[in-house]
Image 1 (cartoon, rainbow over the protein chains, first blue to last red):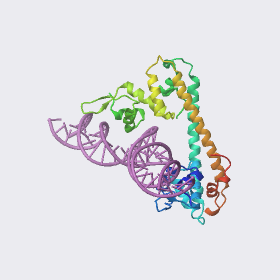
Image 2: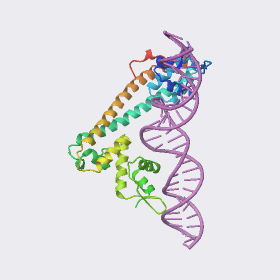
Image 3: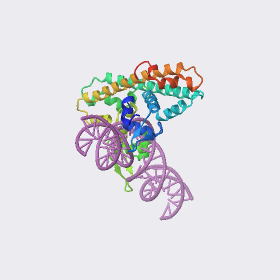
Image 4: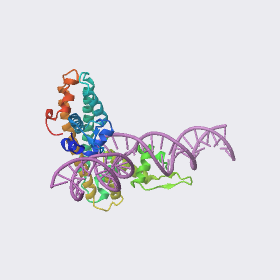
Length: 137
Length: 137
DNA sequence: CTAATCTCTCTAGCAGCTATAGGTTCAAGA
DNA sequence: TCTTGAACCTATAGCTGCTAGAGAGATTAG
């Protein structure tokens, strides 16, 4: 029997976030005490750890909902789980590529600035004039 | 004399977004026609391009507000502009580093999955059991 | 039994837009 | 000049994934 605070301490998920996950349908509404407080058991602890873990990996609530549903059916083929993870990996890679372009552009802008006033600052000029940029961003 | 639609087409910033920027104080409230429609001039076009450009580079509204203010004062020293850009570069780099960790972890998880059902799927197991992870993420 | 600590629900706020509804204005053609 | 259709107006709500706060009730240790 865990209170919501116990669950929070054990998983590192904050209390309002646990309630939010319940609302979003990631975890089932647990039993309540006579005084209306939530009481959890072992399986809910594990499920919340699962969710926490998936969030740490950057998966969306939507994707996690699907994974949680899948994990409740061990006999199903795991191709869906694979697809979710692989798609996510793809989007992580895409984001890295995008950020690297930005990094490159920002490096260039920052390193070019030798001016002393805003009037001849490369940072400001680069932002004012797209022609000073190297590529798309 | 540009209408808000003209401005939108010329800068690639959507109409509601232009109004939003006005509300956020990134661009000044322009003159209006007798019928209350916004009419812009050249300087506002340039300013919006500047903003668009800065947004493309991932700068926050807050940072852009500072840069816009600076660009209105060409005689000021440009150290603030430099600082804003450099700080942003730092946060872009931090995000890249974080995403690379995720990429690594996800690659490992996805590539290990040789099972056929959810019951023995490495994706699901890795999420259920933090012990299967390599490091922090 | 009391006091301290939890917990409850509800609402609002963050960033940076985007979408919709319901109404008004503009500009070009007949 | 009139009409029509596109563009524009404001105001409000929604998106993601939480987080913070108010004000009230529950639990538990001493």
